[in-house]
Length: 251
Picture 1: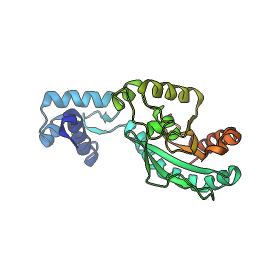
Picture 2: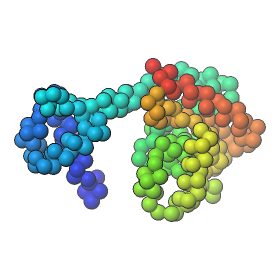
Picture 3: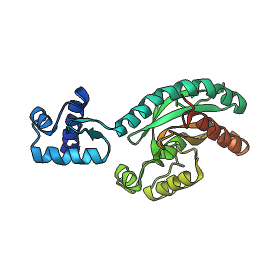
Picture 4: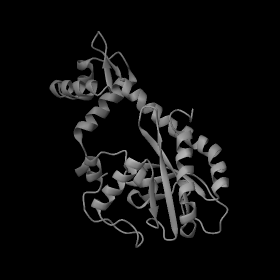
């Protein structure tokens, strides 16, 4: 990673959290200072902030343990693996009913990463198997996943107004992208028509954790000539499948 983007405060917080995780409930401020080399004043500020964020907890003896927020994030992290199993169980039924391909993906930076796919038995396929990546702004999955981010985070992700087109139909400016993301957030689903790959359209729906976090999204994709008469069915199928993977149903 280019060091010009490095944030020293985050690195120090990471060091502190690793020390606390190694010996929960045993280390006080002075212990953490001696182990990390961080000054007492800086350590005090970092611990206060992390305690307010519920990253850490302080007991009556002023020793620290990891906080409840890390437990919540840990559950989200491990549930993504459960999602793949549930997707593999549920997606074949969806694919067979609508006769179009179904995908599962998550957001990684500004990229959509495909986790699983149930492909329809058709001669022409999108390249969207596990491990494939696409720019988030050019896919229905990506637009849906981007709804979980704040406007500040979106502006940081897309600092320039212009966006590179993958096809003649790809959104090519940040203003329009933000409008599309806002629409997807209001509707609860996202669509794209030949933005990622020429000849294919897609509709995506979000997978929501009981705590409100977005775990990922599912989509139904199809050749453009199928779109007009299958669009509504595909939307309902994506929303229904996402619902089965949401709210603890993947457990």
